[in-house]
Image 1: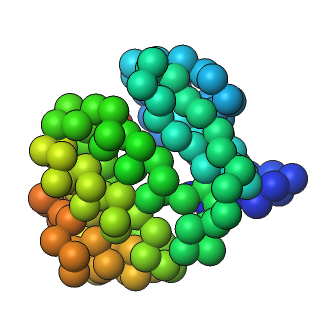
Image 2 (image 1 turned 120 degrees about the vertical axis):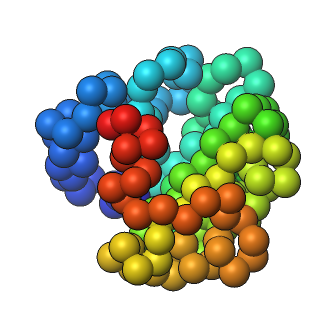
Length: 148
């Protein structure tokens, strides 16, 4: 989810009310914890770094997005290889498709929201069209798989 800087979002409350997993916004050099959902901060790309922590990056937007899920997926694929899983949901551009394909090509598991179930189908369709999806599932089926 692309969030604007200095724009209040209720995403944290939404997840807290509907998930058993804790949620927090990423800060630079945060150690990656198990059983935690992380949200990328506005206006920073979020990288997964070798030592098991996050890095924040201020480079240019990718597909008009900052944070870009491609940047995060690609860095996660580099670090975790076949132990990585990427899930791509609804969105209005192609951000995420190339990064998801890198996860798949590195032996990781990739899941794409069914475009018919998505509010905006372009992101999932982009991933499907380039062969980045191991599985195409509805949101409900993704949540069941993750047991959220």
